[in-house]
View (cartoon, one colour):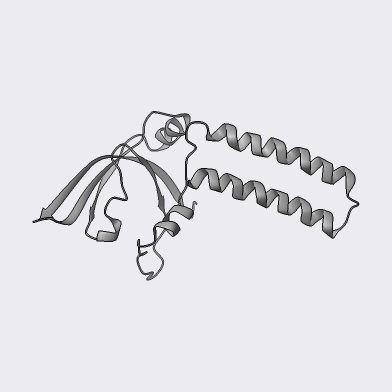
Length: 154
């Protein structure tokens, strides 16, 4: 039995309500993805239809969802009381959100990995087996990871 299930949805409509100039809520309408990418086709195989609406009244969450954008929905059983997450720090939201590759990013990721691999082989073939060699390889892996994060997040 699964402990977590992931589905993928597209935001297809956002209705906003105002009192005067002040936004008081957003109604976000979501539907299961069915096409557009190989990943979407895979999700559609297991979740061929479905949808839901979100009624958002938290001003810090206004604008998070965008029409035409796709979002993952992760479901886990509720096993106790956990406070709702506060959406109030854009940097945290950005750093802990999946960023699907955009045009040109895959090539940048590959170039970074290819060049780092050359250095990794140089370290492997030049440095004697040691703690320092292990650390050098680990730090190189970390460098590639952070460089990829910099591309994805910005």
